[in-house]
Length: 128
Image 1 (spheres, rainbow, N blue to C red):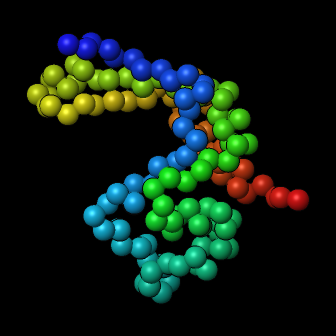
Image 2: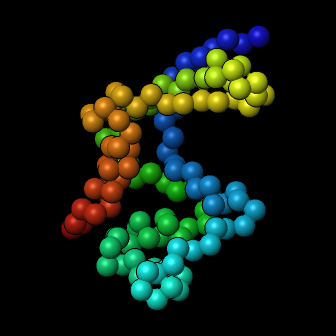
């Protein structure tokens, strides 16, 4: 029986794509509704709030979305982070499911927040 609890990727094994769960759902979730009209929100409604690249990701049916190289370079400062298997929780729950959690305390902020803040800053930065 394998008793491994901690899994650590090498830097060379870091993911190069974000996973979009929408691609694997039996049907897409309903679109968010515009608070003023009650109608589904479209890309034009989001344009005043978000850069085009983030809107494209939000509406993408693709399973994998490439992580920009500049974002990966920043992620390398603290990622990959360890993945832990919660074996005792699995046992206490009596579940055959495998339960994992990530430790994100090694990031500059000591939490998971830079994982999304870095790409948001990247996509919102003016491009020459």
